[in-house]
Image 1 (tube, rainbow, N blue to C red):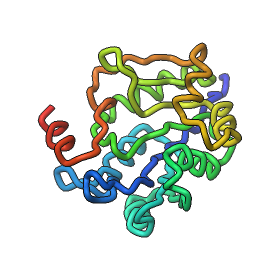
Image 2 (cartoon, one colour; image 1 turned 30 degrees about the horizontal axis):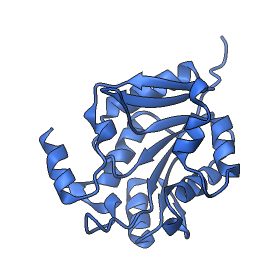
Image 3 (tube, rainbow, N blue to C red; image 1 turned 180 degrees about the horizontal axis):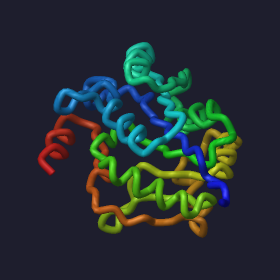
Length: 200
């Protein structure tokens, strides 16, 4: 039997932001008694992502405690004020290069369904050299699954770029995967955003 060429897919959760607008580190904000970070971690675990790594920055010690409670890895982005791409580079640098890809999750998108994660990963396993992005009602969302070649490209990229720039340079290798899940678009920046998302 032919060996699966995509055995191990990592999960990287970007949780370094300060969360000024919501008044608290986003990863530790709770909805129905569960932190945003736990919601994302449980989805990645259910999809059998290994390893799972959280990138913390602001309030790092608190995020680290939550990551340890959840049984996942933690990396410290001391330059978190430089923006999300700096956290992404830190997270990917900590991965072993034997992973065939990585799911890039944003901790402020906690309402993505576990089934959506699984669907995206299943699509990636079929095409492990491609980027897989969720699309809901013609809008691109998160999480995004990237292959090993893109992991390397991001690590080596200049600090002035973003993940959107990298994906834009590879539109020809990007799969737009339709998801019936508004959670892929729900960026929770404020308590008002949280209230609206919980009503959907």
